[in-house]
Length: 367
Image 1 (cartoon, rainbow, N blue to C red):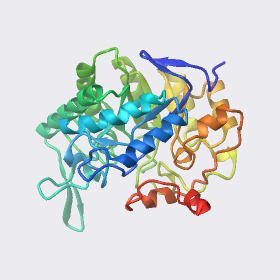
Image 2 (cartoon, rainbow, N blue to C red):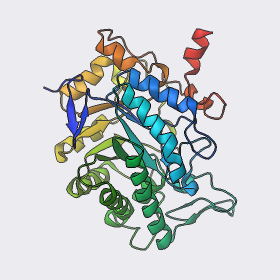
Image 3 (cartoon, rainbow, N blue to C red):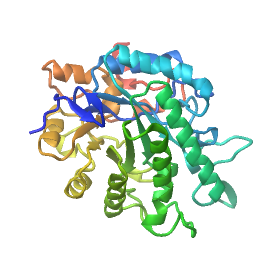
């Protein structure tokens, strides 16, 4: 029976427990994406908190793929020095860290030179908000992911995670809600998954077979006409065949109403934890590679049961670690009280402030 605090191995990467810090947008980098002191402090606190694996906030592989201000970047060699400081701090505290490589696609903030683009054109009230990517755009972006993977290795990251969830670029291509293309990158699921597979193959070619490469995908989009659980499992099966080392399952997009990735008000009972249980059960029936499950975990007993029952191989946390970066250390020490996070999402309202990501409730309590 699997245990939360047993050591495991993912393609040579030795994790001291089964807890993962799921990628969380920190807004602690410089405006151009280079690492700054607040981000170093954030990662230092997480690594001291004994999280088995930290996954960085979504890190844009191209300027055109930036999702928000002060998002960490990995699109230029000049960023490697700062990224090395970040990985060194984590390693000095006995931790492991993966770089989540991302592109916002049609959700990108764009620039005067380059407007946002995605699988298909998006217009609002007659105004073009996002253009459709050409085949050459897709090839260029695939190379950008590969270049970013090379930088991640040189910067000392222990693994890479490809962000293909939450309605960002690769998720947009997977989803028929966003993807209206009629070429070889649109239509059936094989075509819609082509871009993700090309990105994975490019990264694998750059980093080799002995380096851990993971992916984050939606269980489903929770959108009419979006990606379904059945399609997710088919994509996962393809990725398993291709040699993917682990899959993190999330769900929803910013258009998914109450079923956005970070749901509000789900902290009141254990029954409301584990958002994607049904999808995880389906996944484990069909797929053998390790599953990292995120979404709603707040209670030690719920996390323990999820791993012990075989529902998931790893438990990923996000908001609970914003309020309590030492949560895993607390649980390991015997204090198994529920995480103090109340799932209010007020932490995300801080992303546009100079203070960046922090728990508003905790800060108020300390004042």
